[in-house]
Image 1 (tube, rainbow, N blue to C red):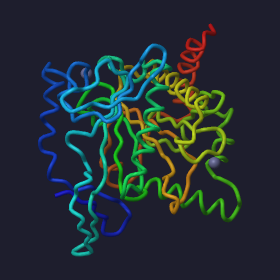
Image 2 (tube, rainbow, N blue to C red):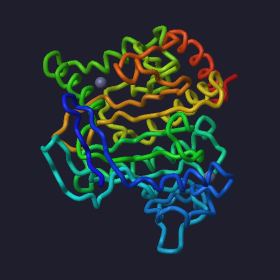
Image 3 (cartoon, rainbow, N blue to C red):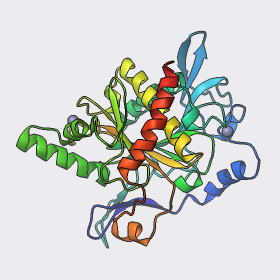
Image 4 (cartoon, rainbow, N blue to C red):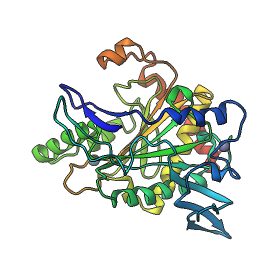
Length: 345
Ligand SMILES: [Zn+2]
Ligand SMILES: [Zn+2]
């Protein structure tokens, strides 16, 4: 059984599944010194990859596994999750009784971000990040072309505290039939402001945080800052400076610049916090034309502390590091990383 249930009173959604018990199989691979299913040489341990980036000479070529003959020597590898949260084959059962539910129809993909098991995200170089981001764009476009896909959630879980079962750096893409509540809430705010004032409120945030006490880093096209009401200590967001609705709209030049700011800020984060777990999520507009649009961005939540009953039960967050103090530390470390990356000392 797998279905999406809506809360009694609010827009909160839960994917309820009873089919993921086998997931512990994957845990054991990494936890007990066994083979990592995401490492080169172990391709047979995962479902067949339908998008594999391979370097041929100086160019990158897209390939896919053939049955029993996986592509070797890859740079980035994308395949369906062995234990998906949502599935294209979910029974199409919609219900109102006893409460609202809809089928969890969708796709769950894993994108292995590097062939190197120990190459943690903060160390992945700019060329590799650019390949990862371009592959993410490709797969996301493909997913939006599939039936029943309302939104593609793109996220990273790194470290056990962040919900990861496998250490090998990977990105997940999970589709749901409509906008998730968090993005829907942002989209409503943006839409209302655009309708009433003709202004994107997220563009206003970018303008007000630029050069301020919460700014961490700026590059040609992006700004990273610690948000005013950070829920997590050392949380930071990365926004395109100009109004842009989707990560799919990035040009190659912007993509490389995003790779640069990601490498610099994640590198800065790891200099300040050490080898900490984190989540990274993309807030994006849907490609479905009927849905409201946002100013797309990335949010990074370092997982330096666990949530308590207050956070879980009331949605009120206790953050023991002010965003201003976080920005000062992350900013100094990230600027150092950036200077190193672009060869300025
Ligand atoms: Zn591995
Ligand atoms: Zn905007």
